Each structure stands twice: as structure tokens, then as C-alpha cells.
Length: 179
Image 1 (cartoon, helix red, strand yellow):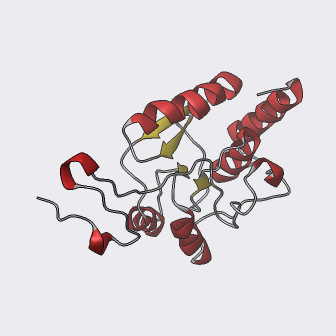
Image 2 (image 1 turned 30 degrees about the vertical axis):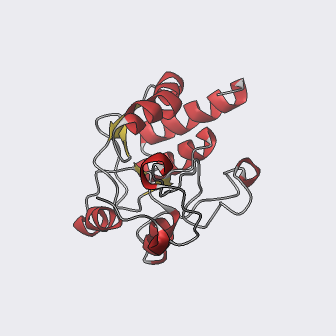
């Protein structure tokens, strides 16, 4: 949180959730928007977080610690609500299964934009409310109806030129065979 105003907004949201005047899902949607995260919220039956926690699902490994440091700990400090990190991986099928169960246990998912858009169009994800979320804080072209990117990654193919020889190519068909 950068200002007392933002802290006040979190406190108001937390109080409304505790009193039941807003659903757990709406609280999550608005709180995530205030945090500026690009994660998306699952659409489900509105329930209150009896345990006083939100479940944030990512792909595990270092992401669990990184997300807790970047989002979980600051959110806990501001609201008193624990953000439980779940590294089980929010695949499109797993998210759909959560939705179809009628009792999703995940509140926020680190899903790829393609999956989030696909699931959102089926009514399984909450759309991002850009009247609440400041879209200028997202990279241009990376804010969609049901997802926004907070980080980027790519896949590469590399090989040891000392071992296989120089090979200038734009096609994997011309790369040296792997042994």
C-alpha cells in the first residue's frame, strides 16, 4: 500500500466482508484490484471466508515464495487476512473442475490469459472491473476482459555450439540431432 487512502479502502472492504455485506468473491475481486495484481478471480457461489483466508493458486516452486512476498504478506499486513499460497497449478481443467463442483476452494488463480479468456466466456471467471482496476498500470495490450499479465516468460531452444558445431537456423529441423 502506498497511501493511507488505499489502506482505508482495504479496511472498508475487509469490514464489509466480515459483516457479510459483500461476498468473499467480490471482496477478492476488489482487493486484488487495489493490490494491482494481474491474477484473476474464480467465479463461484458467494461465500464468506470463515477461515479468514484467501487461496491464491500458482504453479508452485519459487512462485509460492515470490507471490507470498509480493502479494500475500503485504495483504495480510493491511487487512489481517491470510493469503494462502497453493502451488498445485491452476490448469484450465482444474479451474473448470473447481467451478463445476459448485464449491470452488480457490479464490485467485495465476492462469494464462488464453485459459482465463476461454473460461471467462463460459461464465467461470469474474471479469476485471476496469472502473476499479487502473488499466494504466498494465502493459499496453496485456489487459483483457478476464485476465491481465503481471509477468512474462518464453520458451527457447538452445544447444552447445562447441559440442554440436555452429548452426545458424530459423527452423528446428536444421538443428543438430539430440543424442
